[in-house]
Length: 158
Image (cartoon, rainbow, N blue to C red; front, top):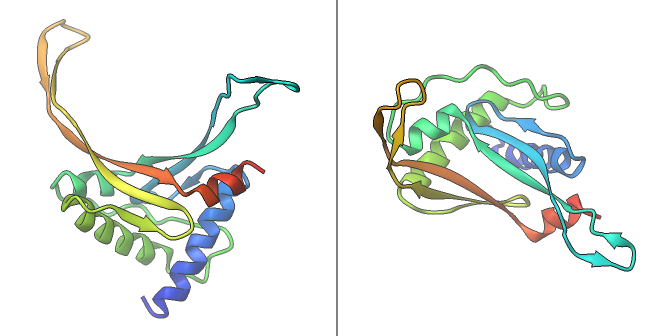
């Protein structure tokens, strides 16, 4: 990507601004950010807490496949309003490759200004087929976990 640092900086600023504004954001095959509200059960002088907004990352199909060692299909093009001049599809392709490479080796990835992405394993277990009731083995799977930096949490909850 030409001028990769500047392009990535603008893209990161766009993602951060969308999260601070409380908007969900789809990043194609990489995944999507949704906004969730965690309830605060503390009672203070002004009544019950209003809760805090948090950014929740949902794995996209490309990232999920690559982290679990499967080939990934090409994602649909992503249209990002305000960033039409940036090669957003190229940015996301580079991010999927980089994240999958680091996470498959067990290394966390720090996304400056937003948070940290790390790998977590969900163990396999025995489940039941809801239609027949037969016992089936559910395989283990790797998931990507996102933890926001305190600066992003503070910006989302002024």
